[in-house]
Image 1 (cartoon, rainbow, N blue to C red):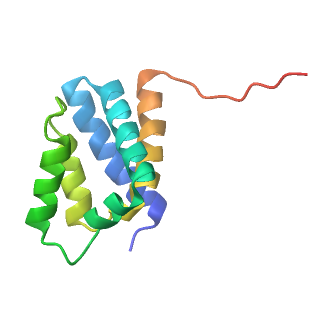
Image 2 (image 1 turned 45 degrees about the vertical axis):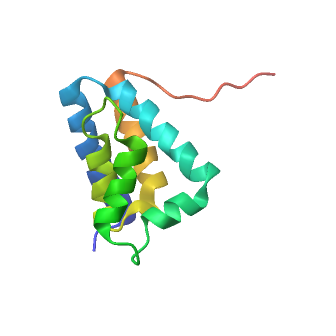
Length: 116
């Protein structure tokens, strides 16, 4: 089995390719950040989407109901992929890797500022 970091990178890189195809990389950053906040605000929501006891079709319908109006055409498919592969529990790591890769793509540098 691949390491977590490899998994994060592969999934994030695939989504970045789709975001670049749509020319909406920064929009995907915002959407994934919003989803992360949803999961932090309502941890039970993430648990439900990761449940083995709920049929995948029902989980997909829930994703469509909540995120289906997004103008980003690959967003719901991405979430459904995470649910179908049972890797939604790794969302934070995938999100962080996507932000790193997409910041590189957008030419955004991250740094630490010190003051005295």
